[in-house]
View 1 (cartoon, helix red, strand yellow):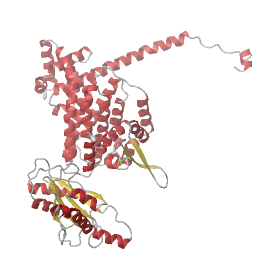
View 2: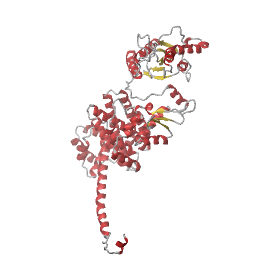
View 3: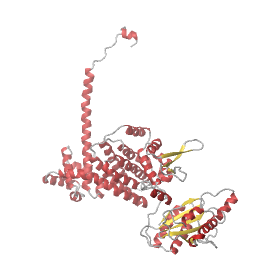
View 4: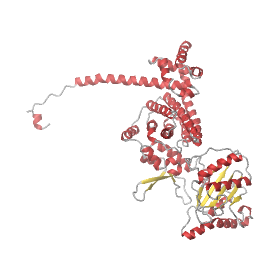
Length: 583
């Protein structure tokens, strides 16, 4: 059961919608199922058609009476006096009678402070049903005694009451919220998107692009520049005294109001962590040295393999931090920071990964947007390394980096599983559900990336005798996981990777001993595949280090030879012409 609290300033306009046919003729039999008190007031849904408009005006005047009296007493308008809360059951829920919906409405207005039980001076309200699965509760938020209601946190309180109603009425229980979810698109926003043939509303489209821009940007200037380059209108909010930027709003080019003016959404209206203050917490976390490094990353192209190896290493470090097992507040703040940085890395990976993987990774990034924040305030400095690794991917050049991409995505899958479990352990139900939804897409991308390389390695598997020798090394080195490793369909690929590592100077037992310390083997469905990517990246790193060392050693004699070949300058005589001329 989903409530959605909002406010407005036109009672008659909302009533016309509630008792009208709907924007797509979806309203069937609109009528009042519950109300505060309506002595002699007709239900607009139960009068003859020729009396309909008169009944609407009469009801609007009745609801607005306390508002008008307050305005006369204070001499000014009451702002946003119309309180509106649609309540909808989940798909598949049983049919609720008018009497059951009436009880739902009474409980919602009581729990939110609009009209508590037994309070004769409460706000005036009605509940209108015009479909099987939902009602609309409308109230004017001025009490009979002229005061405003104490309804702070009404959205959160309505959610909590709906969770109790679901249990009592046997409805599907939805995940409890924690006031960190972004605002859902309104009915008119959804209807506009459908009329324009768009998949998402303007609010959702702007939110997704704002997250992607924040992931790629180093500071707020670059953030706004990226958004502008995407054709998004940016309107900064300036402080009245200092003139400094204190906030911002975004609008799309084709989302306009009745006057043709762009409809702007503030950053915080898109999502809590897209407010300018929250973005500044991320952008301003690096010291001068780190900022310089970030600039270098954005101004030069880096080796693709190195970028993906760096991402893989930071993902594994983040996994170790998340699975550390401590529950102190400081550690939770660091884990929450890893979740926020991981969200950015997913967005940047969706841009830099091979083209055939991008759709699934982008879907994973969008789904994880809900899991990247909770009521725990993040210590963003703790995740600077992971964030920088994600930005480095944006500068990587194209190349034969399939192994490194698959390895990084494998590490990302394990980190995502760890973050979903961390959220679940702390009661973050919506975040845990979003993480699991993201995991479906990320696993699909990881498997797509891994399949060709695993098939190629399996096709080059060593002889049966060599495989038996390597299997013996597995049993001796990793006895607790040996059975699962050898039964994994990826074992032939792992045997090839072990043989290649041996050829590169890394004996199988030593290589396996180094890899067996990783915690992922305890939970991996396919431990042999995990070892393949760990071993391949480790082998590549060893080869790369040898190449760098060899290049360094060969460069020294060359420098010495150049130094020897160039004659040293002869000392000038004090009385020479050159000295006299001042050169």
